Image 1 (cartoon, chains in turn brown, red):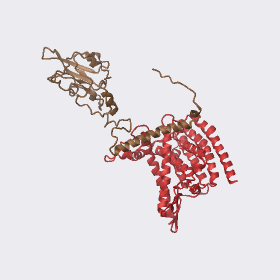
Image 2 (spheres, each protein chain N blue to C red):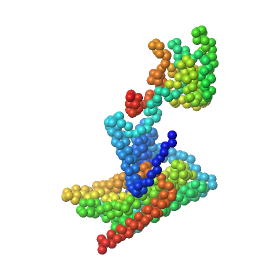
Image 3 (cartoon, rainbow over the protein chains, first blue to last red):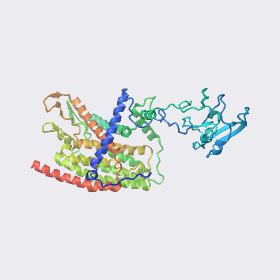
Image 4 (cartoon, rainbow over the protein chains, first blue to last red):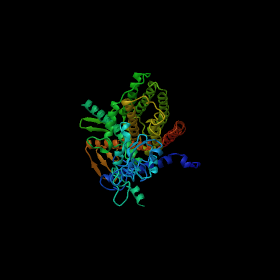
Length: 203
Length: 359
């Protein structure tokens, strides 16, 4: 949406420039001393709930991510620990980046029919559209690990096989719930919490 | 012994300036960060100690010294190397006449915290600042790069325009104190008005002070007057510089900021004067005295000067991180059509008042 900026004639005081400069200086000075005061207070153990900056100190502090953010994939498990995937090839078919590679095999259980012998995702190609999650009829693939950093020195290292995709999934709990929420998923990096965002969540 | 004292004073002044230059690189980062609700550089550490990012000064200098020193193959090797030295040299030389403290008697020896007491004083400072332009123009010329050359030309055009204003703004103060010597001006500012107001230059020349500070800011070639450099998008005179040569240009900027602060303090804010502090201690206007030894007076006054300069460096950085850059035509318009007429007006009004008062 375009934003319409109303143009108006500057009045005399604004055109003099000096007054407006001083107003600008007042704003920046106020920020400076407010933040300086907070930092010094925190040095002595006060005002821990205040923040002297809006930035995150990244490797130590992470931005909280919303539950619906699409992050690194994982394959969910059955109760015996085998993948829920039935190798129906829906995700492989729908994938616009063609980054999923599945080899199907016959499952010993006649109720299940097929299971994936191989299930590779090439994260170097993946565009994180989430179509695979949408397409899956078995809720076997999810993108809720909360992991956003995965890098490798080689292209081969970006190809995640079934073992790596499974290892972040918990076994389904006995209550019959087969899904894990973001908070339960293991391997989730500890999330530094911002007080404001925490309040937003609570309300 | 006299040589030893002179050497000591030079050593003191040089280290204060270089210390200021180094601290300013840190201060600029941290101050701008606090002003913009950020944290600022804090990653460099020695054995896990970060000390508010102060080690970034060290990390920066190591980086500068170990980087490749690239000289453009078409460029002039000699001039390319000499240019940053010229710029830095004249910026440093200008400090020779700035009084960092008064004249103190230690028994038979006299210590003057001013390297050189020239009778042309302030003119020498302006001469050195004008010579500094050569560094920037040479840098542009020797780089064999049209953008660098244009940057150098912009630098010279801007410096010359604002030097005229700067020269005109201090004429008022010269008329009032009747001297060109900076030390004498500072001593004159030690008097009291109405018995209790320190007679600092800003009381006589508020307009002159504002104009002088603006012009001095333009002389340092930093935002909002950084058209010659424009390091973020338009390309300035040091585009072909790398390593410590670039670092020297950067240091020149900071040292010129210190110089601008030092000049503002010396001319308009009482230099090394502490209110009510005289050669033998404090004499308060409401009665009461506090006798101090000479060494304490010297330390207090030199300290006061350094603190004042520091505060003005803070102010200059504050302006630098608040205002956006002027467009080139706005810059020239401001200099020639607003500041120069105002400074001439300042001369005329001051002249009339001085004439009337001295009758």
